[in-house]
Image (cartoon, rainbow, N blue to C red; front, side, top):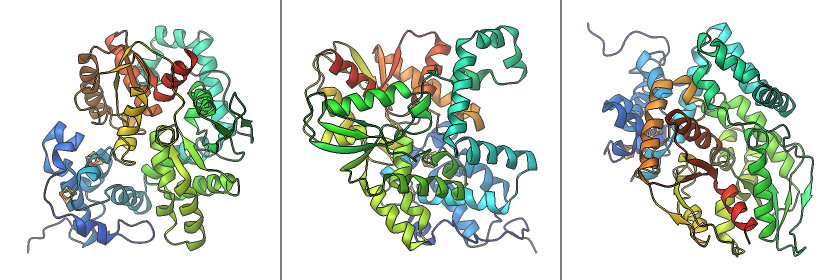
Length: 436
Ligand code: SF4
Ligand code: SF4
């Protein structure tokens, strides 16, 4: 007798971190999400759409499809986890709460080759899990870039030989001096403290984008904030969680929750959209642990994107900046955190600044954590679409609020030889305050 699915011992999800049945059941297959999905727009293939992927999850959950079916694994990882589908879903399907556990199930039940498992442990568990190691790696990258080694590697063709040319081109200019959170406090320049906030310094933000972390402190201080960089904090764990490694994510979450607890803060400020979404969703990691879930709820309730917070307080008027900008919306700010108006209101508060909207400003740029490394073809096609749309505005600066987007857009501009700058929103505001 013919069977609908290939034979497999891996039927259904099992163990911790399973896609919740009630969220899967909420999808009524209306298809409203399809036009928002970047992979569907590239392929027009139903399996590459949110509806198609939820159907695959439902098929695995009820045993009609094996967890080891190639189409399931491929689609869970072809998805960018950009969450554009979630933001438009009329049934309220929390797609992010489906795809991350679906990947965790794949990683738990379908072992990768030993070398891949080792690489994932080194990258997610050790490099991003230990900020001392991460800062050392960043310092080595800065030395590589500034010492002439980079020029040598590029000219010799060794990067091409190792197929690392594209990945190397994504790296921003890494400064030599990182922001190391050891409990330092910064005060408003006029000494008038109106708010007391913590700064989540981040891993990539505190190293490759250390200048943006410092600019964020200056902007917050200009707005009456005492800013505290709590000691003991580290990477948010988002990359590991998105890659199906929630156990590593939980270790990161517990470290960060403990670091910011008992500090008496009005808010915990984050300037990276991807990290902010992960920090706000820490409670999902602790459904089986009521004590940590309660601590995570308190922590996540205090987390604010820097633009969200500045938009909520009485903004100190920035100085004039006569330039034209366009805004690349980070997916995890627009779709996961639903913050779209605040960054635009902050830009509108800068006298002389002209914001020209690009087409599809909230369509993923193809960065999506490590997607530009794991799915280079789709990533590059989305990057090219983003660069086309940004350049069509004629703006001299592309503003964003996430390190991954900034690196992806900057590398696309470099490839085109376009003399357009990419700037983090906090750097833009800092520049405006500097001009007062
Ligand atoms: S919009 Fe929501 S309910 Fe409709 S197909 Fe997409 S995920 Fe399902
Ligand atoms: S998260 Fe993004 S890529 Fe994935 S299904 Fe939803 S819209 Fe498509």
